[in-house]
Image 1 (cartoon, rainbow, N blue to C red):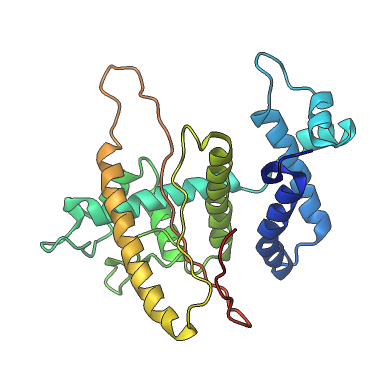
Image 2 (image 1 turned 60 degrees about the horizontal axis):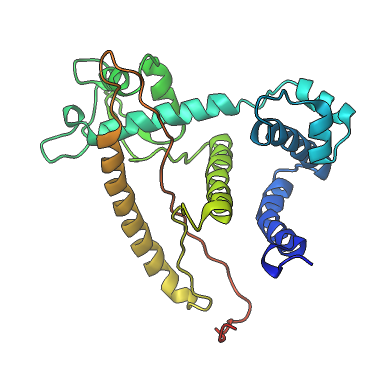
Length: 282
């Protein structure tokens, strides 16, 4: 008999709870179950191929079929289907835009005497184009500007000068980009939980939250404001540490091993029809 902590029923209830907000989003965007089922099949095959491959063995449709429960015919169809979702383009735009905004906030050449991001001309030695060249490689400045204007992170005045509106790349207008962030951020959280389930005893990753079940609704505005300010301050502190360690490889040396790393913070609230009372945990 399976241990209570790892029984299929426990996992099933957790997955159903996880899926509820996702299904609400899918229904709100008119995505039917058949489309979700097709996506799930594609991800099952991709995970079986890339995350459960045997060492020194070429993945076969038969093994993927055994792992996923799909037929070999379905596996072959899904493996040959083109990936047209544009996720790679979205990720690249997100990363480049985020680097430019971070440079605008942190780089002294683009800040005023008080240390605040100053308004920039598009061209010039310390203009927006120079900012993009320094912090986003060979990306055309016009393309980066269009992206930042589109998501509401930058405003352009009548005299063509640019003003920073948001210190982080958080799209305010683009539904597509907001949904793209859903994929990145939720995937990171689930990956951390999965890592801690497997390696939490020896190599834990930070995963905490603070929550109370019956806070008066009248107190929420104050908590939203306070938690947002404290969270932003912590993220900016961590950003400074990461920026200081995001260094180029030494000239002539072998490339250093690289890792994508970060820490995410999110706010949540849920209205309750009746206040829940905290009981004594068993």
